[in-house]
Length: 261
Image (cartoon, rainbow, N blue to C red; front, side):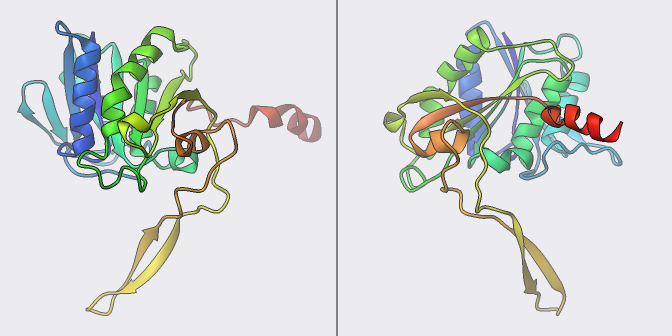
């Protein structure tokens, strides 16, 4: 198996090293793992592409490249510059430092990398490690992802629903904020919503008198509804959520047609 990996935390992020190990285990001794990751951190860029300026790419070692762009840029670079002779069988994005559950899905560069792979017609999985009191201070906060990641990826490759729709399914996996031995199992979930969590802005005045705004996040340990991603994660389960890039509110179409057409 040939696997392309990327992330949004950058080429030197510890979560990428975890993903490399997961990918090597899934690919097997005769497989190939290719890395094309951002040269610098790209957290929060979503599915952004560098449409109005070029992306510099550098080869750092065998099958290992850094690109000065977003995760979606890196997937495009991997497909159209690095792996031009043969496309990958699978694209993995992560392992993100922090959860990409609930509303975080909409902002995540980790999700954006997997989404771009799906739009290119390839199987893709995004992986993220929830942080919390039980794992944040471990020697390896990614312990749960490291221990269970390969098994989850294999299960999705072998048993996941992989369609050929225009907007193909891809998968969002979040590992719970626990040590590896605290993981209770897997749950297939919907994307949740934290009712009291929003991004905001915090103003600061620099020494030179100029005003700067910092984006602020909300609490990450508010449970979402039962059956959704963050609820499962906070209960100790790995969440597996099928996603599509199609943003149409299909349930509203018939009523809107009746009212407006």
